[in-house]
Image 1 (spheres, rainbow, N blue to C red):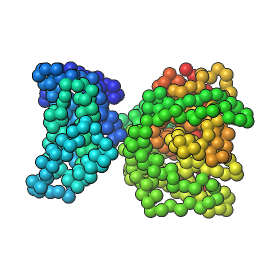
Image 2 (image 1 turned 120 degrees about the horizontal axis):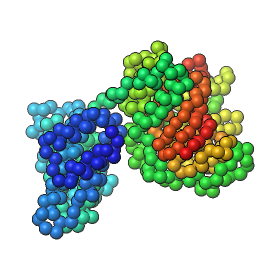
Image 3 (image 1 turned 30 degrees about the vertical axis):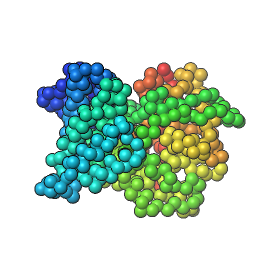
Image 4 (image 1 turned 180 degrees about the vertical axis):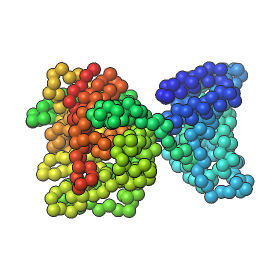
Length: 484
């Protein structure tokens, strides 16, 4: 069920400004059936507030005020249904029989201070997080705590619609803090099984891989939307051997940085500074970096693409462990275990470093196929985008800003990458799932067709090569054709 489907339900619920027990039960059932992964909870909750802003009114009489109060109660009802369906209380040191030590009066005063100017700045945000970390509400007080934000918020409704919209944003942020500090996501389990029509034994390896790639694409709810969540400026095309720079401006015009706070994006970005770019320089993995690797793998395994990847690989490769924990161990081995890339050298590389971070070998950029790394390095001034690579086939669709696959040329710290292809806007879990599936089930070269949902169809060759007998040496896509 898409976000837009839920937003349509929100509008229907707000149309009469009431959510009765039956509607609440229906919402809970729908949230449970939709089975949203952890990274979507914030979006679904924030959507209730954003849609609610469409129904907020100026309070020119008592009737208008009552409508606004009913709207706040309705939003609270949606949030309540979402939390009951998808979240559970975090373990707390506070015992249930000690709930009388929870200072309800302090909570109310804190909320009143936050609503006083209808904005929450960095200092107030820190105060909120610190307060709930130190005063974690007992389980039986969580609903009261969240509902109190709405109840006190009603006292700050004004005659001005713009001011009331600001109030809703403040309430949303307070609820966000409560959920972040006092609750956690229920363990995510992908309910879809691998369709028989996708299995290798049914349709052959090539067709199976292609269908599986499309399947994980459709499961990638964390993918960013071009021209909405981000905007790129492809500028002029060139041939790989052309000298000169055909792009006077950066590739990325903007990216909504809030996406980088999502669990898988945040955990992924934390890994990018763990490596030395030059091959031949031994990598040293600290205990902190080992913890970051584990955090990342655990985060992506709480997503649809990676859970489908696991099921697909189990269905088509008997050597893949059925246990999630053992599969995570396998992922660590093929992606993060070190090996030497230069013959006779020291352990200086890993599949993850090569594919997602990039390396410099023999005066050229090697690997470096991830769009997030491209964006971050461009923002730091370390990367100069030089234009997209013109396709060999003149009948290919035009390269533009809504393409999710881009073949490009760039300089990184003064070293050239003559030609490389990257997905743009996809989540880290999609790329890990794609390359892992092809490595464990596919071949060195895997021809697939991908419908990206922007009216584009890409014929791709997913290449995966092995290093150190059983580890990923490199993996990337090559764009063969592009159709509208």
